Length: 424
Ligand code: EPZ
Image: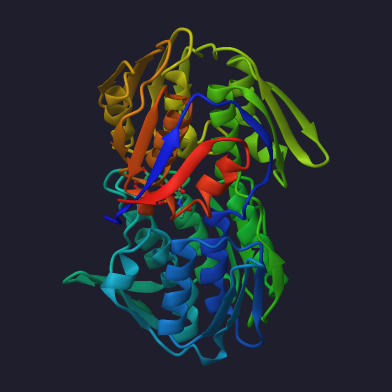
C-alpha cells in the first residue's frame, strides 16, 4: 500500500467547474486495440494519465511496440509495427482486468498467445469463461495450465454467431478485437451496450475495420485483411462525471462538468433528481445544483447499461448514508462490491449488508475518521463521504483510486473542497 493518503476537511459546499477526464474504460480497450494495427501509428487523444493506462503501455512496449505518452496533452502514440511478442508475463497481466483483451488483439497477429490471468478490483470471482468459450467457437484452441492461458488459432479464425449468456463488457470487447481482422462475418448476440463499446467500434473502424451495432445488443463484425494507424479521441469518463455529480448532491452547491455526454449519465441523473438535485444539460456539459439534505430513493439496483451502473453504486451509497429516509441497494453485477459499507459505518453510517443487498438508513451526517479504500470506486465513495463529513477524514489505499481518477483531489479542490494528498 502507498504511504500517501487523502486528507479531507469536510462539510464544504462544492462550487465551480471541472473538465472531465477521458474514459478509463474506453482508453484501455482502445490502447489494447493498437495491437491490431499492421502499419502506421495510432494516436489516442484525451487518453487519461492513469496507472492502468501506463500498465497497458508497459505491456505494449514489452511486446515490442514503440509507444510514447504525453501526460500534459493526454495523448498516447503507439507504433505497433515492431510488435513481435506473443507472451505477457503474469506480473504484468495481473495489474488490471483489461489485460485479458490482449488475447483478442494479439491472436490474429501472432497466431498464438500465452498470457497470465488478469487482475483488477476485487469485486468477486471475475471469471473469463465467457471470453474463452467464445474464442473456442471462433476457431481458437485454448489450454490453461499452471497459471498460463495458451491460445492458438486452430488453422484459421471461424467467423460465426456468438451468443453471450450475460452481456459481459470484456467478453464483447475481446470478440470485437479477435474478429476485426478475419475472413467473414461474426455476430455477437446479447452484446454489452456500454458507451465504451461504441468507442472501441469507432476506433477499430477509424483504423479501417468494419464493425457495426455497438450500443445495441447485436454487434456485427465484418472482418478485414489489415488495419492502419489512425487518430482517435477517447470519450469523456461517464463514471468520473457521475462521481462528481453525486458528491455535489451530498455536499450541496452548484457545479458545471464540461465535456460530459449527458446521454451517458442519464440514469444516474434521474436518480439524483429524485434525491433533490436540479440538473440541466448545456452545450458545455452538465450543470448540477443542490440545496439542503438529499432525499433517499427507495431502491437502487445495479444493472447492465443502460441500467444503473455498478461502477456508481459505492458513491451513491455514500450519499444515501446522509439522505432523509432509507435506500435499499441491490448489487446484481458483482458478488462482492459492498466492502465500502463497513468503512462508511465507521464514519457513523447505518448500513446493513446481507449478501447482494445493502440497507442504508440515512443519518443526519457522518464524522470524519481514518478509512481505507479497498477498490477503485469504493475509494471514490470514501472521498465522497469525507467531503460530506464533519471533521477530518484520511483515506488510505489511494493507489486504488489513482487507477481510475487522474487527479481526484485537484478536481475536488477546484470545486472548493479542502482536500490534500499527504505522505504519512
Ligand atoms: C468492465 O469490467 C469494467 N472494467 C468494470 O469497471 C465494470 O464494472 C464492468 O465492465 C461492468 O460494467 C473495464 O472496462 C476495464 P463484465 P468487466 O465482463 O469487463 C461476469 C471500474 O470500476 N463475467 O461486464 O470485467 C462477471 O463476473 C471497473 O471501472 C463472467 O461470469 O465486466 C460479472 O459478474 C470495475 N464471465 C459480470 O459478468 C466472464 O467471462 C460483468 O462482468 C466475464 C464476466
